[in-house]
Structure formats: structure tokens, C-alpha cells
Length: 234
Image (cartoon, rainbow, N blue to C red; front, side, top):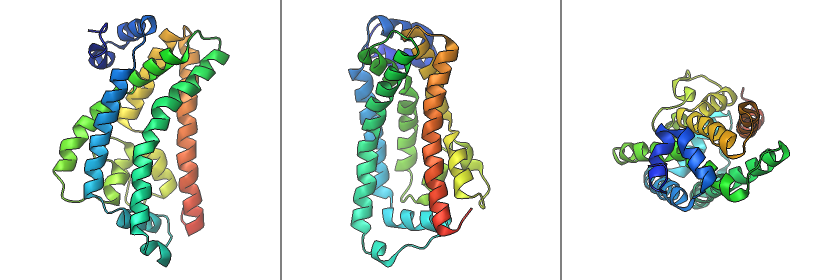
């Protein structure tokens, strides 16, 4: 199963060590990318059909202690367009940017890996996100409308943020939301995959992957803190 491009999509979830060794010998990435792209796109477009982006933006600003400026009230179309642009373009930066950064990091750490192999390892390590999208699709289809609470807790309630008290501040909430099951699953697979493909120690693989994840969390928490500071919230 781990030898074929389609078989790897499943085997990486149940036998990651064997699968990543096969990927290191013969890297493939197109099928993994296509599956992630299609499933993610379907889940996102279904969300867009049921989401009021203007109301979501208003509720998010209220949670940060801010009021929506009058001019933004008239810019519902632009807010929706920006939300769609982020949802459509953002994943591309993740799919191709993460392997690029980790390729450079492991090169500095003495690893032996090229970008194609890094891309193959990274995309297969993101297969838990395909599982997440598959589970989200029926949940989204069962709802007539979606709002800020659905974004905050996640459609599958798979993060610690989903269980935070209602009065949790935006900064802590963003931090808790980052502790998400499918993301952590991806992080673990990335560590396993790069340890094998880059031929480095588990310590180096963990340091590189966890470091990149920490940077991502720091950016999101920092943006939440900036928003809270502007609104006078905590």
C-alpha cells in the first residue's frame, strides 16, 4: 500500500514509518496535493455558502472589545471577498511554503533532503487535514447558517478552544485554539517524516518542526493580542 501514490494517502496515517521510508526513496506529491486541495476546497466553499462574513467580522471585533467602524458596515462584499481570498490562497502558502522552510532548516541542520522530497513528506504529513475536511463536510451540510462561534470552536470542536469558558480572552482563546487534534497529528507526522527523509536525529526533527509550529502560533496569538490592545480587551 505504501508503494503507490494513492496507497500512501492511507498508509501514512496507519504506518507512517514504513510510508515515509518509501517516500524518501521515491518521492511523490501530486496525488497528495490534489486530495488536500479538493477536499479543503469543497469544505471551504460549503462554509462560504452558509457564512455571513460581515456578521462574523462584527462578532470577532466585539469579542476583542472593539466596535465595527461604520464604513465597514457598508463593505460586506469586500469582507466576504477578502475572506474567500484568504481561504483559497492561504492553503497554497502552507502546502508549498512549509516544505520550503523545512527544507532550508534541515539543510542547515546537516540533513540530506531536496525540495521535492521535502514537498512529498510535508504533503503526506498533512493527510490528517484531509480526514478533518472529510468529517467537516457532512457537519457543514447539516447546518443552515454558520457564524463566529463555529469559527471560534471549530466545526468538529477538536481544539482546546472549543472547551474554553465564554469569558476567555481573545489571546488565550487563540492559544487554546492552536492546540488542535488534527494539527497536532500533522506535527507528529512531520517529525517522523523528516527524521527519516532528512536522515537526522529525532531531536533535530522535533526542534525544527516544533519551532516552525511555535512561530505560527506566536503570529496568531500576536495578532489576537494586537486586536485586543486596540479594543482595550484582555
